[in-house]
Length: 453
Image 1 (tube, helix red, strand yellow):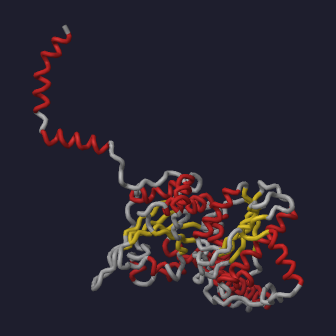
Image 2 (cartoon, rainbow, N blue to C red):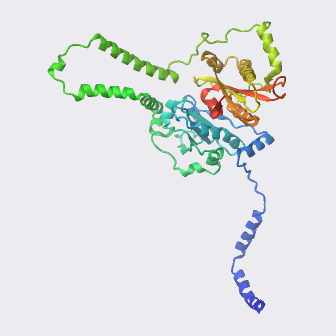
Image 3 (tube, one colour):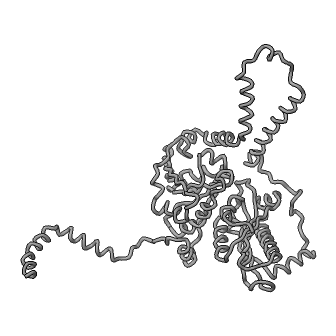
């Protein structure tokens, strides 16, 4: 009985089908067919582990990260022959980020692999507000955050086209490499409207009139004034202007010698404070200190006993590859403090003496690598003159050490890995210590999340 009812409805169903236009039905069939075809668009793996395998298999070169500072940022954001997109990662240290940027730094360094595997990714740059406080003050930049600049193409005979700027603030605890990469891949930065205010780095009122950096110095100066100095000014103001002076007060005796001494000491202290702050930013001189008290100007003779002992030790432990120095960045545009970080593997169970020997080899390897390939490097001279700062940190696996090594190389740092010969405590070929030498802010971006040894 039910079959007869269905047969009776068949003409009605056919009539309904005929009412659908033939072109629409054909487009529907075509869409279904496309769904079964593989896409031609390259898909970037979703995690750092997956993309690391792709980078190693296809031998993709790591995307360079430009270090922004007060001397190069204008040329980078200047319109060129082609339009460019720039992702600027803004970070800081204890003064500018209150020690909360470690997770963001680690995530950004790992996201470089994701950007490297994506041919459509923008140019990458890094702005350290700890080393460039004036520039961050001029931009009114807070860390950690990502600034996306759409730099237009240069136009002959016309004014500069506007540069679209979007900013995205990063959560200091939940940020991941995927979070930073999706700002580009899924255009998350467009969720906030483009910035068009007075402090726009290229299109704002101050930038167009050449007042952006002077404003940055003023803002930095106010931010550098300690709270006790404000209290001192308030105290003098209240005593001088709030109270009504009488004739007796105006005719009182001149200040004593003690008052002059105290006032001179206060003024000298305030002046010295601001001179020290300006010197830390490199405002007065970029000349490096020489010789005394810490220097390696004395050369060791080839036939000395120290040199022979050094060569014997190098037969046991040495860096895992020679290298040609092409990956080294000059860092000529910064006067920042230079330090050497020694990353030690704790999973090998080395004794204290063994660790000390391996760290010595890593220190010597970094120093010899720089003197061989960049003998006149200002970075090396600055490290020598500033006391050769060395920090010992720890990692728990060889995989983590390899990741740090790759990140350091991509940033242009001097990085050397020490491989043990296996004659004493550990197996032959074990990678024991990673040495990373470079500007403090750049090195902290790679190893700042590690614990002290």
